[in-house]
Picture (cartoon, rainbow, N blue to C red):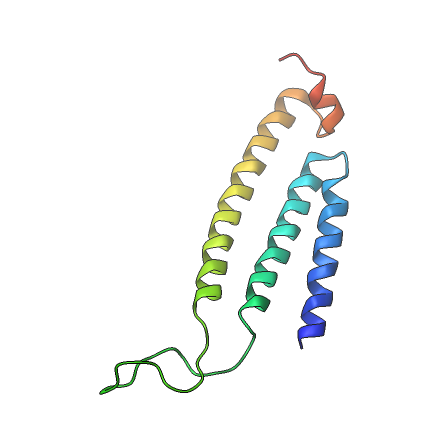
Length: 115
């Protein structure tokens, strides 16, 4: 399972970096999305993927006993997904506005405009 997860993370990083290096600003945003998903999977994999019990302290006990799942990576990933979605939506609105003004999504042409 960990080997498969590592391969998926590598493919996501590779395709994300490839898309970031393209000249189209839309492909840049899609590449950033792929890289953020790869980072989320890396955080998830660092939390030791397991099917242990929930981290709930039973009645009458003061500490967790036995094996339990670590909730911190899941909370971090959920926060990263929400922030990434908001950032992507904001970037797409900016791209739409820039395309309406300039008429292209080529990064080099956008760099040379004087508006």
